[in-house]
Length: 301
Image (tube, rainbow, N blue to C red):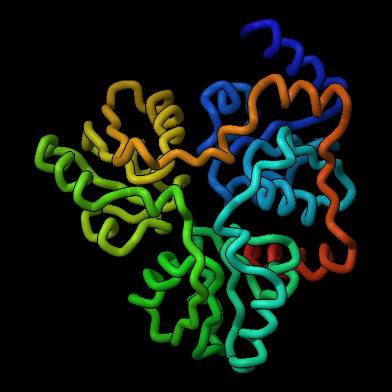
């Protein structure tokens, strides 16, 4: 443990704080965190922590989600400018317009959305529980799914419900090429291909498994395979290597790097804990509505 890590550990005790980090965070941030996981796991951990302060190392909607389910805690984000391009592709007014056009549809919002969008939605989902969430909506024949068109179209393949999709997508996952994966498969014939649900349909066709990042980690741990081609943001491979030292991981694309996930570092974690700044606040009327949406998800998940 270096000097800065020691200082962060001391501050955590002083502030009664917990550090939660997404699988796409820099290795140094993952190593400093108390818990590393995907969006669902971070939401679940935030909802049940006893800590008074949550440092959410991820992008803004993740910190916002933690603040929504923890109105009595302080949620800090190391870099307040860490946004999500996909989340910016849908807003509350667009959701209201869709609801007006399809009044008999349930609104399912991907967790990669703002609090204002969650406040307009019936239930939230993550890539790890999206199918389960859709199947829980027994009384609906139509689903408005926002914003990820690729995850939504994938869900529609195994559902008897009609999906109304918006045009959102993840720019990082959009950079993953099926051509490159097929080349890697030819070179590594025993490799298992695992890709994220945010990938384009042609990328999914190359895969052995289509999984959330949390389920990717579980799959790798339990698999007898020794080589994996990983189709998601590169930093998850740090966690995979730590948890599976005897296995080999090949990143599916050198371009699949999220710049916003790289904005957090140890210096920023120390700074926000030391000064108690970058506190994430959600307007109370929006927070209450968004909390209903998230808690419905957590009850199903």
